[in-house]
Image (cartoon, rainbow, N blue to C red):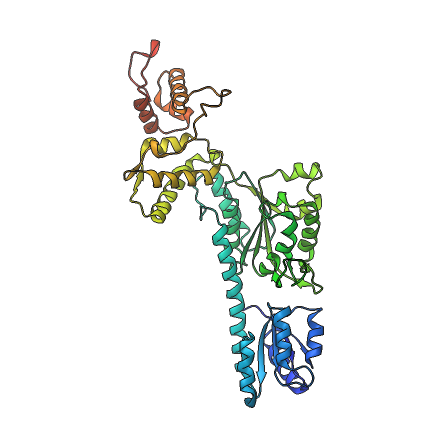
Length: 457
């Protein structure tokens, strides 16, 4: 369990020293204060996870301190410490959102149990918040699938870096699965039990990016109704995924570079420094080296991010993975929409294999989802697929259907190979059975000098 930063507040020296000693022996970072006034002064300069607060103190009471803390520092959890005769005050403190209370005298074991319970509660609260955000923002595909050589190389690389916390830069076209690769890196890393915090740099408006990353203090700007943690702070102990990093503004590039160098930052409107330890994985569909040459991306930030880098291949370059992906999405969407669609027929799979997929895996996912929804039988056919055809309204594009282009191309390859099926299938990038199906589907026949004899291969 991660150690906590704890402030012990009590006007009795022996109590402060005893509590501090017990907590330090458990590995926590501890400071102490002798009064409520001193506590509020300390909180203006330093951050704490937990405050152990005595109710009965000279000067400002513990109850008054609690109210101030919950108003100005709602992320800090407070445990009240009280004598037996002050139980009603402790109960009242719970109404002001104290986490728990301890009755004097108590032993180190009892204190340790309460602190451990609170740390677990804080961890679960942060994790639940980001699970909710991830659920709302996640893409339509959830696991990396591939048997192609290109994907096997990526799997091997992720395994090679699994025991490090090195910064990773993932490049590739939109929809190739860069986010999935980032999650796979996190899941196999030493930080796997920490949060995976995603920031889409292209989707967050520039004017609120600073608050999203660094958090803000209550009242820092007009809409800052309460103090909020930023993504950097919430990623502590886990992985920070900076998606579409090429879209970030020059000003934020400078601020981000400073954070990546020392992991220290300040909330917007805040004066106390925050330290967070996290792994950084960034992704982009842009050419960052060209952006550096064009002076739109800082060279020093690029080299900070470009420690380990790899590119996710487009789907058109890993077509052998299409059947696996299509079957995965078929199983996923039939369950989601509760449809009895069991298979994709051969002709439909051929169409999937022939399509170039400019939208990559995301486009394939959407195509299978649509096919499952509109399919009127238990088998998806070509007619169920939303494969793009040339727009007849676009007069710059010849009005030729995709199947006609395919039929003509297959015919020319067969003629060129003198109807050697094995050779033609190799040139077309399909297997023999697929080519036979295409020949039958399009009614292709030998012509001219190739008319006589049998099919070879």
